[in-house]
Amino acid sequence: MNGYLTTHVLDTARGCPAAGLRIDLFRITGDIRAHLKTLETNADGRTNEQILPADQFEIGTYELVFHAGSYLDACGTAPETPRFLDVIPLRFGMSEAAHYHVPLLLSPFGYSTYRGS
Image (cartoon, rainbow, N blue to C red; front, side, top):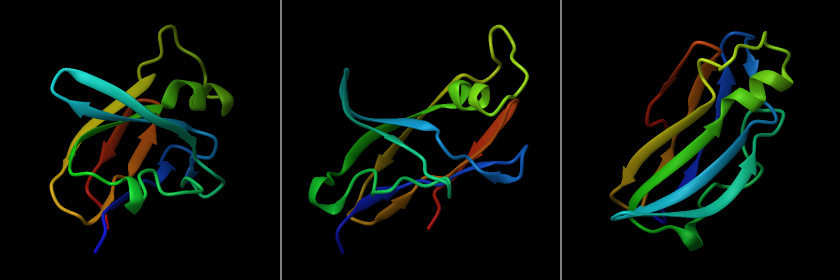
C-alpha cells in the first residue's frame, strides 16, 4: 500500500462542511519547516486532490496549517480583535506507508482533530 494524506474540515458551529478554507502543508526536518503546497477545501470540506499523494509521500513529520480566521471572516462570523482562533497548526508524524486522514472539526472557539480513516 502506498501512503497518502487527506483531510476533511467540518464547521461544527454552522453544521456544515467548511468550504473555502485555506490549508498549507509543511514538511518538518529538524529545524527546517519546508512549505510543500497550499490547497483550499471544496463544498464538501475536502480538498479536490490528496494533500500528499502517494507519488510524493515520505515517512516523516508534517504540519497542516488551517487558516480558520479567514474562513470565519468569509462566513460572516462576528469578528473579534484578535480572533480567538486564527491559524491552527497541526504537527503530526507519518510512520508508515498508509492512508493518513487528519480531519478538523472547527468552531469559532474550539477545534478537535484525530487520525481518521
